[in-house]
Image (tube, rainbow, N blue to C red):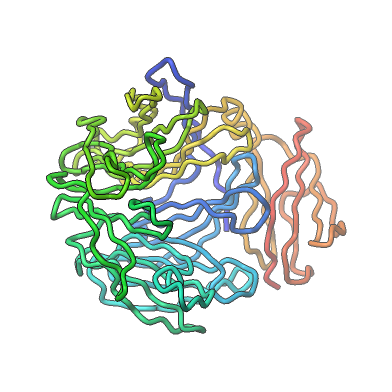
Length: 449
């Protein structure tokens, strides 16, 4: 594990709305799939990440103020693309599942040591991975409480679930057949209070929705056709009329649109184009990002095939579904997945973005103080986990270091930056660093003796 020094860049945004500041959280080769999770149950959202060209899976622990510490799960997973985390084995810590070039795997978390199990190999272009008790959703009559794995296998034209049979055993069940699927999302498009599924088809240029039938998941209707390179998609009540609509991004058409659920039952959708000039429109998410009561949209555009001209944008809704485009970053080459959360504890939404070509994970924040604190007080604690000597460094001089065990007992006080922990018992410890500017920064470490 290593603490990454945060590099800081400021961008000038398109106006009228709050300014976003750009902070590089990690240099991460081929950053592609990212997802927020509270890995260590401390109430702050951490980050999971998959790096496709770097063949790396990792998670980043957030100290609550936007400082992130990287732990590598696997640095030899070919074509790592998507990752998700849940407690598979019920032992109280978070395990992980991920897709790569051809493989679906899960990693048992044994106090920070990761035991890899290949669930299936030889898959043709596996993509989105999501973990939940999906088997119970598909068959409510037989709930089992186990964590299953949902995955899109684009080259096999399938959305599949790997049903958790207990232990390391999973059984594959194909639930939806769709040509080159890119993204799957839930919703209730016919207002029957049972979950429906929305999926995009890149090759068929369409978005379809599906529902739970007597014999599994069945096709229910087409939301959009001639939506070239259908990619990111989500369901939600965009116009606040009580039924779920759809938003989508079309990679080939460079288009972002929302689709109005006209009759409220999913029988007819009307397309409303929001933007037809988002290069390589990819991923999309709706939420009220400016707190004015209506639903705005955040989206990424990958750019051209080399990742140039990529954009991260917000479409601000005026309340009548008239959207104003604001480019908040155009420096992340090959912008792909993103997540919108409050990562720095200021009660304002931030946007975390993966740049697959620029090889970075970037935090876009409206909090200018995040720049000062990251730049001045960056603290590096490594290696982590550690066996013998723990190294500590900071952009601001260290005055004192205190280390506490998980009971809160102080086990060491020093002003040294190279600390011998070889006599410590195995387990987690808190490192509290007092800097000469009187700032106190706390980091969690794992000793593996």
